Image (tube, rainbow, N blue to C red; front, side, top):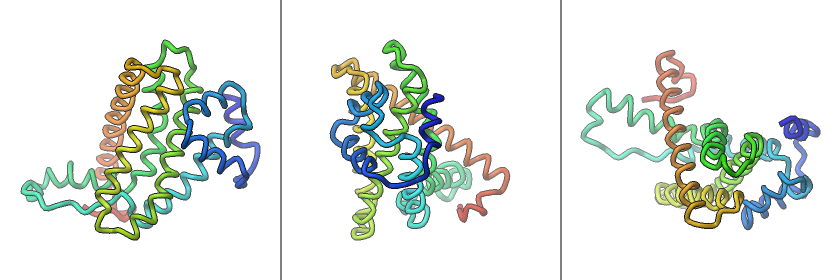
Length: 226
């Protein structure tokens, strides 16, 4: 952890060749590349925290400014019920509006999940943290690639977001199975369970955050309306 933090603050946010190399490596062989970084090949990938901060800043701006994940809700019979609108429609609108920030905040949740399910492998919590930082940052980078298509084909936004979600879930499973060198049904099963558990915990965390902001009457300050 000390080394990780030291590398994160050793230089400013300069864009160097390692950034694009990192994007390529995490696209074609993510598990092996991250494992190599943890094993000491520090020049093989961009520093994880800097990578997340750089990509996260770009995608957060795009997400909030253009509402990338905000898809219009279809009319529903239950929307006439205030409690449904408050706790379901309003919550999902909030979750979609701030999806990028939620993904970044949820990194410790995914870290705990993979550490819990793959604990027998022997990697420590910091190594799981590094892996999940890279996974999240690469998923956010995909948003930048996806952004032009969302602007060119606004009517297909829901379908594009669905495809993105499926790709993200499959990417998680791919990284976990290759990072932990468990390319078998056991590895796939553990990866699916770790991803599902983390997703569930993230939804709960997001829901509690939404309820807390609503109770404190802070949602209007986020330019969010029910």
